[in-house]
Length: 475
Image (tube, rainbow, N blue to C red; front, side, top):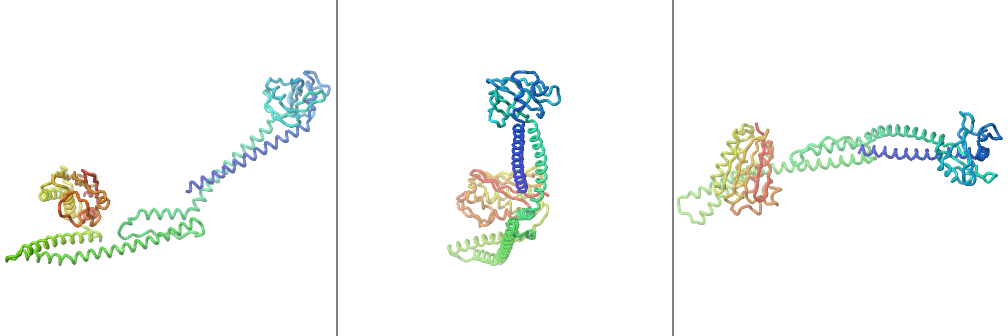
């Protein structure tokens, strides 16, 4: 904006200077040309009338070779025309003898002189041997045409000098105005610069979750100016944003506390229900088949609910920012164990393992990283049909360990893909017709645990190719 305002100011000034310069040059040229015409009027046709028809003999008026040069300025041109021809032409010279010198005219010069109307007004012609002249033509007593002229070189010299002076003055004025204008615009836009700097700092803040501390706001500038009103409006907007973030953080804290408390409180009754169901199944006496089936379902759902409660409690602790263990973990060993477990649980799938020659070690919580691997492999097993090839690859790439879990199943549905790592996300259209399915917390736990280790997780899915990529910093 500063550049555009300064450039616009300089351009407007340049246009104004150019307009003033053109007007001044035009007026000066017209004024000096008018003075030249007035001189021709005052001089009259005396010099041209003193030229003899085609003669180079001295005039009766003076001793000059070819005309009366008395009271004639240097460079005065005179010519006589009769019968459609220029019979004689001469010019006054001050630094030579004689004072009047004949002029050799070309055919184009004669044509130009003959074309000058005898109206007593000034006209500009170009003579090949003399240059540009301002000439005046009148009719003589003998029916001839008397032409008197003065050189336009003084007028042109004065105009050229004005052009040079104007260019120099206007050029200096443009430079000074450009520098001063840039400083003035910069000073005037200081409040706007502060707004931009504050907006930049706010844009760099993580506003998605957690407590956010907005930057301190500068004192408001003059509210009567446009920049001042923008500054004030931005400050009010930041105030509203700060209030909204504070309320959002308080709501998140209440929800997180509720989830943690509820999960913690539910663990005991869920374990109790499961224990009583398993105890009832161990009763030695005869139990009706319907009752036995109901007890089995109670035990299974209690176990499933217990897992869900544990997952919710883990997410609540991760959201609260509780630190995980930071110990050296052999990620290669964890991958071997996880794939072995997945092969035992899902023998219908083809499990492929690709490991580097050297162990890959990261700093983190071994139990939580094992849970990440188990959830990813369980996801691939549960949502792909038997016969699907699942490839688990581990490698060290620079300062990070990169784990990929790839399968050639049907892929993730497009409507599920954007929120696949969100909590309680379950696909309506599953990639397999198998039964079961969790609560939709497995991938959200993967994302939360990886993020707690300072890493990232990403998904690339299309029909026939689904790849989860986990990056965790190495030791």
